[in-house]
Length: 256
Image 1 (tube, rainbow, N blue to C red):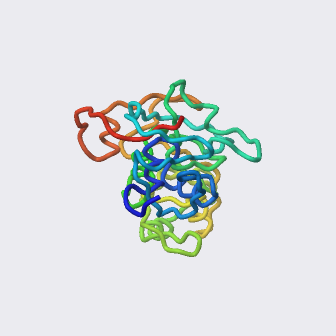
Image 2: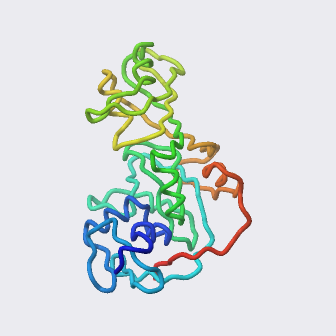
């Protein structure tokens, strides 16, 4: 193994096995081997074509990767955004479209939340969409207990507190009030676990419902829970913030 070359978590992401973050967790968990030896350092690198890389017992073989696919899935409620669950709850994998591509979910949605979830076999694209440094906006419909006043909106726009830390400003507007509840449109450019629930809890509101309906310019449209559709190249280019480039063969890795 060499300290020069390509970082292991990037190789795993390029293979479509997992996102960069998930790949780092796999490394720390001891699920990754290089040349037969377990690697525990996420920053370690390998030389493609020379070093042998195994992930959870599967060898990654360098070759031209399959065509990139990106799908929009309507994640139902009471479903976890993982490929397996130790608690034996329903997972999003049960609703994956029929394709030969090795898809991974981009980011997360809470177990009791619903709405738009992107799936892809391109780990680099997944990282670009999910990582807060790229500031890709995610738009939600949120229902909360108690009426949301102007002061609360100002606090959100200034930057809410989540897990004791001030976060990025949140765009929020009240759509309508009904009895003692408010419906809002909320736009986040970063997200931690239970982000929306925690930021409203600090402000004295209990979240009753979360539905994500848009990521960048990709909308849920008329999808129903459990349904999916494949994104066009124009939509993918919008997620990347650039125009589609001519198709090329890319060097990469594939799990076998």
